[in-house]
Length: 298
Image (cartoon, rainbow, N blue to C red; front, top):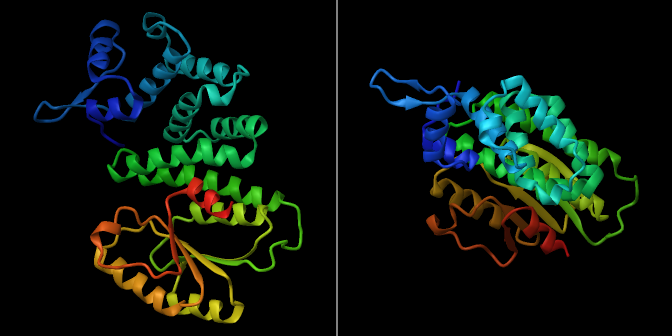
């Protein structure tokens, strides 16, 4: 079970720490625990309740009224608001908060409900880029700071992964229309977070590009063999694993040397760029997320 300081609750929920303390004193909203050294901390149930409260406040309800609800009543109220028919674009933060609660509660039904509502309203790709991607960024930061456990992160990541793969399966079967462009997609050895690569696969296929998808944890020698045999116009890889700048520098230099005649697209290197002595070759394009990749293709 995760432990949170009050500043963690403030950052995740958007509710000021001072306001949380007032709600505790006036409405007994949360019941923080204390360490052996008398330091206050909060648990998952407190964060879930605060997120639900925050969402109801955004809908115009008063804290005095919200504080009267028990946890099951809070959940029912949120479900009603999700189905209220209001535009997703008008309440994106509400939906991201609702997804966070779905992750913390391991609530697949709520996730599916939110995802389907968004797809029906704005379409599959906008749902991913405008809704799911910002949510993934948020939980990525929570994972780094140990505010979400690996089971919760895997639970929600697997659901998102399933949705994107289903989206690929739903694409019409067609001969690639852009014959001069062929992409090889892979994650290098030690890389296991595949959602970004699967999304790139969807985007490319939906635009008529030919894709050779290799997946995660692929040794460099095997990538090189595939590239030599298939002669793609581009290769694309995403980096999220924790490595030293020197490890990244050596790996990227080896890729530059191995693929001198292929356009190379990398994502996920923003943290390491200023810490390496590596200068990309003229064949390398570094992108910063989904929107940047779509702009590159346009």
